[in-house]
Length: 639
Image 1 (tube, helix red, strand yellow):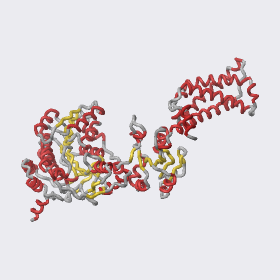
Image 2 (image 1 turned 90 degrees about the vertical axis):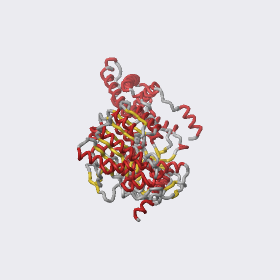
Image 3 (image 1 turned 120 degrees about the vertical axis):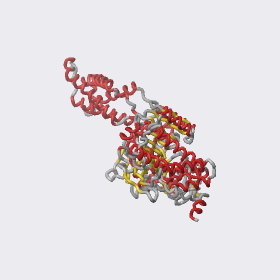
Image 4 (image 1 turned 90 degrees about the horizontal axis):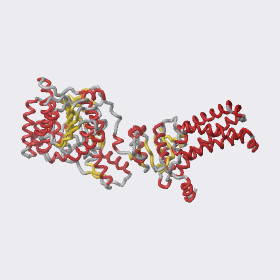
């Protein structure tokens, strides 16, 4: 069909909806045609049926009865271009009711009116023909509409990986939206019983060694991954095969998570590295967590950060009495405030700009709001920055934690959950050591409280690795570098890291907080470590810009190749949750620790980095600096 013909058709077949009265008129026309065809068949295609006495009576009765049925079932009110099996069933029910009414009236009323009763064979044929014509009209109009409005010039041949219910639903959504740029030409399946069959008229191909050749012959440019197949994508080389052929790989989230007001294009997204690193959803004890948080005053420090803001979101779902959200970053905290107003209007929340190292400010907050449950996520976390700003690391991470922990005891908080890091294990940098000192103080305070029974505050520490997509982390940085055209900078070809998604980490923090009794350091199962070089290569492939280069810049100050979750002298104890373990570590005497930490904080205000780091090493003997000027202190100890 040429362009002129298409324009003419579009003119007489506009994209706007057909009015209901016109659909009703067309349906009644099909009733009349069905009656005439049934009489034509009954009279062996002879026009003698036109002289039949019953024709006029049957035609009038069929129109009247079906008009009543159409009005009762509103079969004309559906949008024809979106017709589905449900609409065909509605037509079936409507016509069944209409022709039963015809049969009743013809059988019991016609004799009294002196009208000729039509043959039951004629009525049955009329019913069958009428249903066929109406069903075909819906299908035909839908196909014509899709054909006229689908822009093939800008579409790309596409297959869907996943041929079961979810994959079929995605295909239906694509076909229902003529503005999409995906021209479906088949499905891909792992299930042998599906291979070779057809779904929605399209063939289902096997995910085997022949698939790359099939995709090349058919000219497939894109593959959409069903959410039901994301596990296979993560665990097999399917994605690598597709990317090596220059095929763009997209995915959709589960359909119940689709954005209601967004178009189809917003639901189909490029696969991100975060999607590939995600593991199976972690199951948590919602009832136990809710029993700890519901009706409580919950304080979150670092509430504007990646972890703190996600803790806020998850805590808000457990119906706290109030939330006190503290951060010194004004603009991000304002964003959190706006999110609360949009999504959790019923939750009473205070957003407070404040520095956790400001003792008088923190005392005022505790005195005013009396928090019962505390999530301490505020900290300086970037290794190279803290290597160059030692005093700030101590004054915020260590002094800030000490201030909050002491206030939690003073004001009778029930629980204090501190967010730590895997960099606190055998630390090689200032940031990691500062967090290890925080762990030591909190744990020794908890043990003292348990021995003396002076207070009921339970102190729990959670320790995990890198979180995907957190502020300043490697993945957003790589993404920005790729968008700029590269190069992507990797510090060392052998460097590896553990990764966890932000929601996953926060769910485990909530779970650990609910199960802790005080003094524990909980570590999380981080899965397998990821080689950062492989991460960079995969992100470049996913971006569709294979020309982007990778450069090695060398390890940064304080950075080490391998992160650990446990000290070599430590071992773990299991909990009822398979993803959470308790680290059995050396215990410190609180009174001794308190004095040494106070002296360390005092030293930090002299801004003598060597003196401050020396005091840190004395407190944490396993702190051995790497790729740092502070290595000189370790050499002095060896000498």
